[in-house]
Length: 554
Image (cartoon, rainbow, N blue to C red; front, side, top):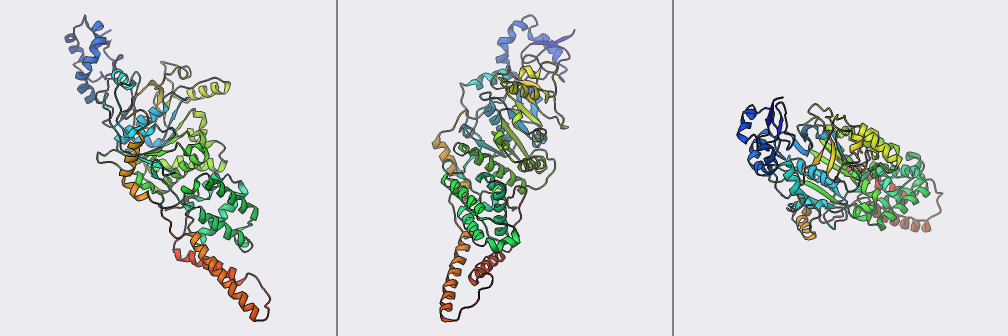
């Protein structure tokens, strides 16, 4: 059989080979390669190949770069891993969503950082949650002397260089990042009921409270607004029941207790103004790289329900905010949802249906969602079936349930005749994965076994001082750093209550001076309060409309 030699490392291979079996350099399309082989010392080539490879790599880099096979970034593809052949993500398929899965310690965080760097280089803004505190290293250039050096040499990456990325760090507590706030009205009754742990009856009462506030144009900005609204509804339950349904004092009391628990856990800092405008995420730096928006969740993650609900609110807000754009050459944003299993654990069926709908429809709005979890079985099948690009790290099968999950995971890949996916899943080393990505037509490619490219940013957390300086220098810090407290439901109801109390005192004095009058219906004071609140609603001058998860549409 005719043979040829790799122009980069000198390895012998069949004449019809498209890629070097040793270093992965593209061979096909180079008609002069067979003739050039004799110039590379035919007899000495086999022995010299291992030593010559490192020295030849720099000279071969221009040829490889021109072919688009050895550059980390460039062209119309994103190189993310290396098996027998390079594995690429197609930019226009990034909004088909994705999954990064694997057991603890298999390399999911590094993979996520590599993907975030790749998306940023393409000018795609990214959102990430930093649960362990080590994602902040994206703002700092990597350092030599780690496994990265060896990986770069093995993969023969021509243009690798350590560099920092444009990062903005947020924190719902405002301690380690730009404060993240939202209003009670923006959060909506569905997600708030989930945070408070309400049952169906109590959730229904909360829906009524929001409806009454919306009808009267009363904005619920922080917890004191909601408490004031609950008190108003409870005090006027008899009059409101005929219009909105039965309102029981027990349910109102249960919601008030939930608010006290949330506030005692620091939840009062989450709600307020200025509220985060997610459009601020859609930005690029002076080099055209998309900003990587990191939410510090080290403290927030101690309350898993609160963590997942806030991320779900962000995702639903993106869905409501973004216009329909159809299929673009690249998405407008990528949203990473870490520890995704917490989102689906014990979630009511109605919420799961809404999540599925958001995942299915947000694609046409130019947003890609990438779930990060330990096992694909953590994600419901209705959502998992919509995730097109998958990076599957090693799975551990210690129990029959684990073995069943491994088998199901392997069956979800397009088979590769070179190996058994089920067997390989238990053999993968750290940083190695099974890679299943979509081609340009949206069809799954054959699964590949390979190593993920190394990150160019720092491995580990950035120093606290560097994070603090990064936060204070951000333009968004001047926008969100200082909380404000404008007039809202609490102030309106307080003022109207004062007027009602004054009216009651006046009425009492009049009763002492005049004959008794038979009481009919609602008192004048209560009517005055109700009328005043209704009037305040008319002053707002707009209709409040809510989206899929109950949040306000902007």
